[in-house]
Figure (tube, rainbow, N blue to C red):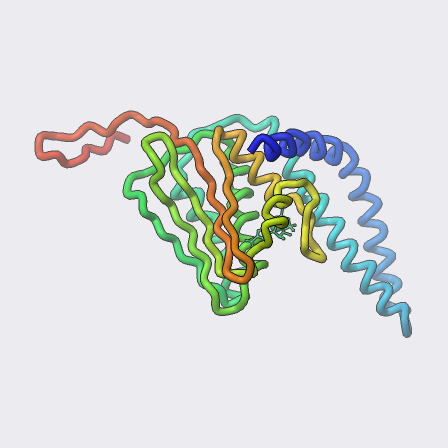
Length: 243
Ligand code: ADP
Ligand code: MG
């Protein structure tokens, strides 16, 4: 865990540096995109392939920049208390089309009856959930299932777990996944999990990876629950909801 924290410390520094030049880079990239489109019109033979490579590498640069910007943004956001069920529900709704496209079923397994309040940066939390679902979908074959579960841990903590039936990871891979830029994907950035780790730790939580090669992966987010005022009950024991 100590090693993981050392890595996450460097992450926002990377993001802040990148954000300051991202704007300049964007202008340059827009121009390259424009000329690539023009090249496409006249490309013949091998050049068609070269232009295609330029295009896909440009895509990669754009997604890298988008992730850099996400990393650098949240520092000026205020912490807020938000509802975990709603946050998770929103994210699953957003990601469902991507799962359907790959013929992967996503199930919510809510083992916690009552509402759960968390304290932190809601948008970051959403982005972290998106990163985890994206990774699970990218590792999964058609026809498999991804389970997003909400589990009780103790009075002060909740577990949000993402269990896929995908490729799984080797022990060496598991050790490296929190290193910024570690990726096994051709189009990967290696910033997804470092971001999730940093988000969890900024909320006083932890992140655990359990994975077996060829079987699947379970990523657990252990998060502290925000104390809300206890809901008073009337004499019959039924809850009275106070807005
Ligand atoms: P990226 O997705 O851009 O590669 P991440 O930080 O999100 O970067 O993930 C780092 C690496 O961890 C991935 O390249 C992959 O090898 C591994 N990984 C993450 N999530 C999973 C998962 N659910 N199943 C298998 N491997 C995973
Ligand atoms: Mg990822």
